[in-house]
Image (cartoon, rainbow, N blue to C red):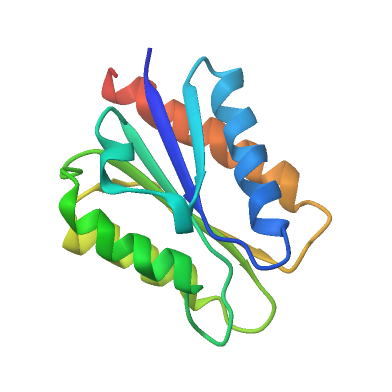
Amino acid sequence: MAKAVIVYATFNGYTRKMAEAIGEGLMDAGIEVKSIIASKAKADDLDDADVVILGCPTYGRNLLYGMRRFLLEMEKADVKGKIGAAFGSYEWSGESVSKMDDKMRYRFSMDMVEPLRIIGAHPTGLKDSNEFGKKIADRIKIGGI
């Protein structure tokens, strides 16, 4: 069974809800899911993962501290070639998703799914997040994991 790890940081709880909805979409497709808050995540949490999904809201045009810390920690993990995805919510600018996606794509050489950005706590955001989980599951199945 394919395994996905979702590492997320949250400011007001919406990114956690997005992570849960993404996880449900993956589990509906038969993917095993582990979710970890970024401030507690370690590089070895990614060892058995076929897919690594990072989520963080944009705050002050940047990532929250917990996700910045985890991206440094992630340098120790062997994720090259693994499927990756980034998601997050924002009110004004939305840079966090691009920062995570770029790091995963170019620094870690991961096979990235097009990222998900949600403006604020948009009413369709959780539905879109669930669909994002299903989209990632489809990528896993195409890859033969």
